[in-house]
Image (cartoon, rainbow, N blue to C red; front, side, top):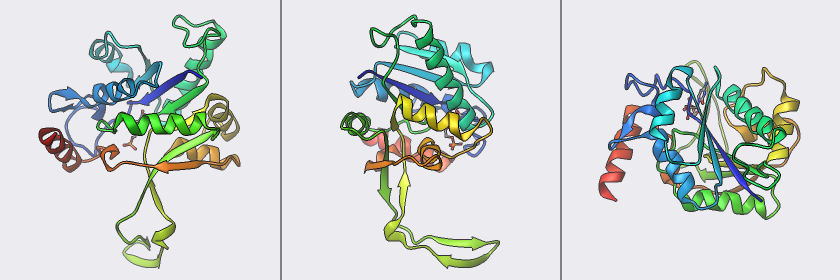
Length: 236
Ligand code: C5P
């Protein structure tokens, strides 16, 4: 079963405040998206990567990622639209035989969706997600338990305290059989918006399996996260 990875990297990254789209911000000298792609390739289980970026940054992304088995495409206004475009691109290429066939038929069987914003994701975590899909789970997410107590609030008023023992923080890569993710996107409708891809599978009644996540797969969202990532690289 061959594996394609989709890397949504088309966000604006305003919460990071680095003056550039987050995926293009250097982390210890290497752009975040390059680190994310190299992690996927280092896992040894990914055959091809599709990276979706803002339209104005396609050329820059192609230069940064030159020499790797990567295709760059234009993302959408929301993360969900970005992934939808990437899936359509995979499908279109399968239909036309593909310029770089990842199977003799020219299409991937498994698709990973991995945020560019998780540049330190361990390759072993990526491999474990693919392994779980290969083992028969059509949708797989890496998860971590929560350390903090979580409360539901309205304005500044606490409404309730959520049972922490049943909550998990969800990371990427999320892994799917291609048919499962395509069906979830098709059935959810073009205007569907979700903060992760497994959410769409759940919405259409699919079962999502969990595997243990890794703290190093944290998402770089704020300047604080970027600093933590730099310190982790310094210490490694
Ligand atoms: O904004 P957030 O951190 O949740 O974004 C998660 C990932 O989705 C990031 O890698 C970001 O670049 C990507 N994204 C995208 N297209 C958008 C918005 C976000 O590819 N329109």
